[in-house]
Image 1 (cartoon, one colour):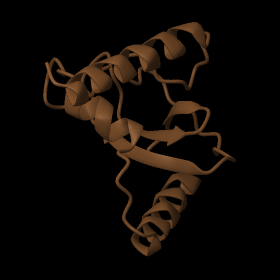
Image 2 (cartoon, helix red, strand yellow):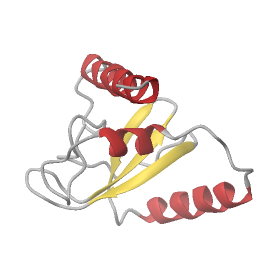
Image 3 (cartoon, helix red, strand yellow):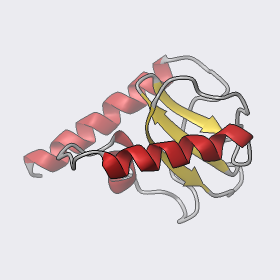
Length: 119
């Protein structure tokens, strides 16, 4: 195992422990989004991904923030605006060598099916 793979594995383990220890908030991500929130996220997002429905997981937009991962209703009015604003800011930003948490998780996780992300 090389250092990069070991680091990714350690990061995934830390994230899982943090999510487990953070309580049972309805809109926080556990293994997949089983429920969603329609409430806007007030803090800036640092990443997002779309989860397709695959029971028990529901269709959701998973937003990454400094506070964690949140499951949001796909067709809530604010969700599209938040994604568009994030994509515009990302396009204007200079390229960074640091990978987002979502990209690390999705590149190291082995989802049970191709339609639902899993941690």
